Length: 337
Image 1 (cartoon, rainbow, N blue to C red):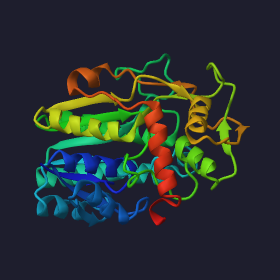
Image 2: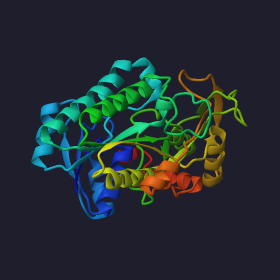
Image 3: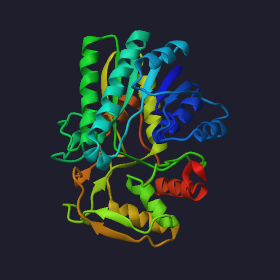
Image 4: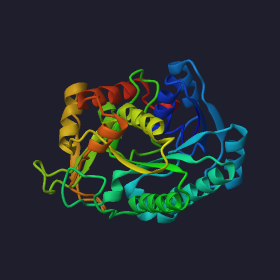
């Protein structure tokens, strides 16, 4: 299948392209390289023996997207392109609504013009906000607490409204939790621009000596050790989830919604201790005030993904930590190493 992958040079997109190639599909990547590097293509080719197609461009450019969809005879789209830092979204909301919402709107317009009617959308568990209970089911209320989450929920609502008006379309919304880890080859992983906005790459950089100390935002949450609990899922498991969603829903019109996670939560301090155990290093940290928009507990009910997609996260926390550390050691400066 010829699949357009927007943002396919990024962290989750690149791992998904690897799994698509391994499964015999033909991914065509569209990326503006704002948070990724051209070297990713070489690394993907080294892992799979095949090189995905790549077109430099922006998802906010509808005419460009129409040309790509038509020229490459695209059959389905996996949409990753967007920005994703909760903290940054509080200070730069225009950036988040423009990239995440307007970009998705332009993509749908382009797909409609090119008569491509199958989409898998990279959403987020942030759309649930602060849930009344855990584990979180897909039926829980959508009540995001920050601009990033609101931008994702707006895209979801738009896509559901659009599919309702275009009943022949298949649109799958994947609400995934906290992706970590890297490809076990150490060739592809998370390479944030500047200071990492996510916990695990920050811990890895502190452990490696690139950063002085980890800041833990809040130790007074209603959790066993006071730090926030999240559902951490290996990025390759997550990539497999996108492949499962593509295969299961492409010929099934409707809007399909799935959580992708492990169904288990780990606290910030648990992740820190697991990293120390694996690396055999002491990782310095300090407690800082809570961040606006953060919540205490968040992990998934993944029963629907198990039942309908026949997908399940199989990689352990130890594997996630091992693969993260392997990536960090092999690529101390990311793809610029």
